[in-house]
Amino acid sequence: MSLARPANSPRRDLVVVVVLATLSTLPLWLARFPIAQDLPAHIETAAQIKALWSGDVDANALYRLHAQPWPNALPVLLLAPLLSVFDGLVAAKLLLTLGVIAWPLSLALLARRLGRSALLALLVLPTSFDLSFSYGFLHFVVGKPLWALCLVAAVDVVRASSVSRLARLTLLLGLLFATHLMLFATALVLCALVIVVCSTTWHARLPALLSTALGGAPAWWWWVQQPPAHGGSTAFLPPLQSLARLWTNLGDLHEGALDALPWGLALAALVAAVVTGKRLPLTRETVVVVVVAVAVLAFAWLGPVRLPQVSIVAERFWSLGAALLALVPPIALSKRGRVVVVVAALLGLAVHTTELTRRWRAFSREEMGDFDALLSSIPEHSRVATFYVSPLSHWGRHNALWHWGKLAALRGSSTDDNFAWRDTCVVGLAPGMRPPRAPHLVDRELAAWDFLLVRGASPPVDKSLAALHLEAVTSTGSWRLFRIMPITASTTTTVQP
Image (cartoon, rainbow, N blue to C red):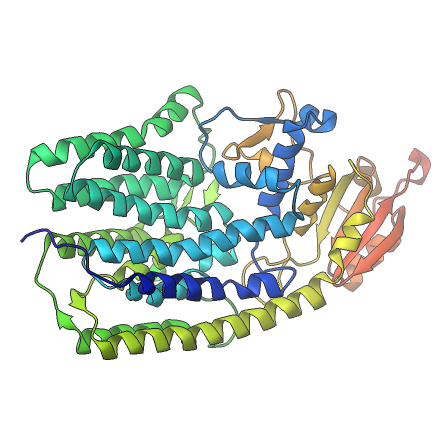
């Protein structure tokens, strides 16, 4: 086996990948509110960082910014200054757009390093809007391209080691640590695998492995100097149960089969490309992409689904493993194969953009309404309690309506739940501060808050609200905002929902 030279794919192939990846982000810009569960919470964290940087008195009394380097910090640190220029959601969409476009582009570069056509990256477009995106994992979406680029850098240092290439691998791993801890941890192992498998001598392996180890230095410093809390538990799913949830953890965005169609088209195009393509000789790169793909899929299947203070762990890696599978077959695309790949990508893209745009616009119209106007009704630096009759929406999966109240942080307000209470967040509670308890629909518990934001309605909840000392402020979509009125001890009620 010998190292293969990168395929001489025309530069226009990379342009095609970028253009189609850019078109895939249209739903983000054609709907005000995307279905991305945790996204508002990350915007809240960025708003807290911006407030801390500006010396805001209330923010400095409540929060502190952890010393760097800190895992899962870079995206919100980049988002914070953007909030001075753009609307909070627009700023977050800019970062998401960058991550979605860079993901297939990074895999196109990896394909070329492996001697494949860059056009094969078009087949991974369905993996852009995956479980991690629908959950609103901003850091994971932004970190996926860095993860792939770490693999590219590992191949590069094996092919021709130099100071600049070694430094690039170290820098990319360090940036990935600051972007997402789980992606970093897997990339560290996978880069070592690439180096060991692709290198022919230990003289080539040792500098590359040293560069990889140096990329882990920020993580080592963080672990020693700012040891993370270990509260919580670790959980694994039985293997058969994990397989039964495969589609749910891969690309199941909403009811119906239309979200599966782009995946089916990509698979059919890959089969056609293999059948019509020219078989390439077996190389170390072929071996290493198989090893890496199997390792990622094995982790997605058998890895933990919960770690201390974080859940949905291994499930996120199904789409990464699926994307790598497109690069496994050692083929050179024929002219017919290139046409099939591009046509399949275009058809899948048409379905994807049409269906997501339709659903997200309906979600924005029916569930959210003029939520921006509702937020503007809350005075700055208010305390906002939240109550959810249900956080679910039939327009998408997961708790699509959870966290939206956290956008009040853009005006300096605080809610009864934010990520600063978790030790893994780059923003933490100030010394001596304790998280306030989320109130029940009871006057004496609501008295510590200025406003109550309610999502959804039901007869029991509406009856409880009517008995409380509340003043209706505004409503929109499925949301209602109430001002909490002062009460005296003699008028306190104990009505429960």
